[in-house]
Amino acid sequence: MAEGVFQLGPGMLPMNTAYVAWNNLGDRTAQPMLFNYIFNNARATAAADFLLCNSFQELEAPVFAFSPSIIPIGPVRAAHRPGKLVGHLWPVDTTCTAWLDGKPPGSVAYVAFGSFTILDRRQFHELALGLELSGRPFLWVARPDLTDDMADAYPPGFIDRVACRGKMARWAPQDQVLAHPAIGCFISHCGWNSTMEAISNGVPLLCWPSFGDQFVNQTYVCDDWKTGLKMVADESGIITREEISCKLQELLGGVEVKNRAMALMEAALRSATNGGFSFQNLTHFVAAMKQ
Image 1 (cartoon, rainbow, N blue to C red):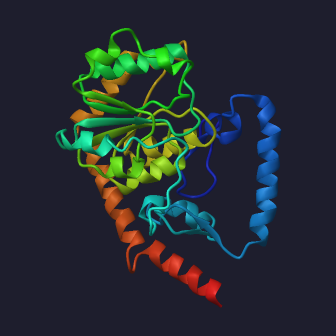
Image 2: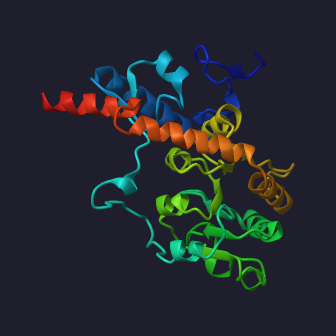
Image 3: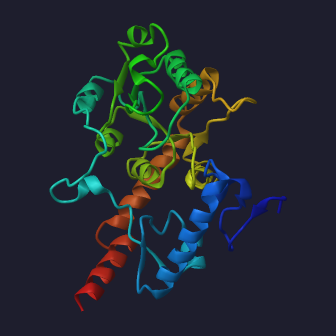
């Protein structure tokens, strides 16, 4: 195995040490806090009767064979709970799905980086200009804190130039958006919840990780499941408009990655429905809690 690459168990995906969470905190001073969390978490899990996780057997079978104490019950999708009890950090733009209704199936790039990712002004501009250069329709969740001074953040003239095919929203109902037939791909930070929502809806990913476990998740998406593509930064660390446009064209113009994403979605559905592996695990857990 190559230097700097490790494999925890048989059949598990080889992983580059550069991608593990403690090497992607942005600041070395945060490492002791993460290690302390891991240590405390290990003590807690050793005392637990059940370790439930938001995944499913077919997605990470070698992991569950390596650690049989971890019980997959996913995909767990908060928007599907009774009463739609979903919390949001920002007010949701309820016009997103209506806007998508007017777009052809599989044509729209959905862009969202979760709750914490921050882009500097240069990278924000490259993203905007890359979406414009692609010529593709897009729905971009541009949080009020995504970059400095959002009131004047976009490149000059950008909003007018993309008005006919682009929509910027402060926050979107993500699970509903990803379930919409107009969505063709998801430019994502690869947080686990977003990754599972993409899998649950058969949506290919353009991976743009920035923090913690997101780089590991990207490795699974691109190298194991092959349901997405990596964004590659230039020598200065910027993901350029040309890279963004090129990867969008590649993903939206092909069928192989989409077919694999759809197959994974079907596996997730089988696992979560009556008789499936996750369904049985959750049923067993509920029964144990009742005793």
